Image (cartoon, rainbow, N blue to C red; front, side, top):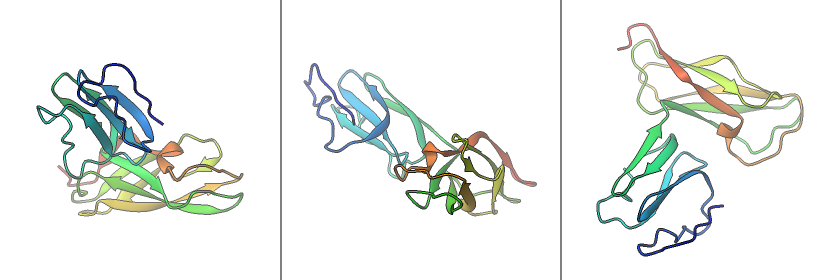
Length: 166
């Protein structure tokens, strides 16, 4: 949950109702938040377009609010899981989503689990021309929590382009 206080001349403290965020940034007259799904919420003064989040912007890792502008770091790939809970011995399906289609030969994305009890393959290959690929997720113990796979499984920063890729 995001809470804001102080000068509110341009609505920069009027946090959208129900906003849950992983990261936030405050500019002079506007505020930004990265939602759990990798999208961005922006509110407050918008005299220079700093709150006009680009359509389709996803996979955001970090945001920064300047005086009259906003910037974001976008992942080349991000992961989501298909179910809320995984029980002992059960499995789930994860999906790697790329920001752009994989080139010729596909794109290999290295995977890592931030949870010692969640097992994922070392990598998954997104086929040429595709923007996503699935992979199995296993657990030996009960895991509860929110439907946010990127909290347990993430694509590594290193993405290897397949043979023939630019």
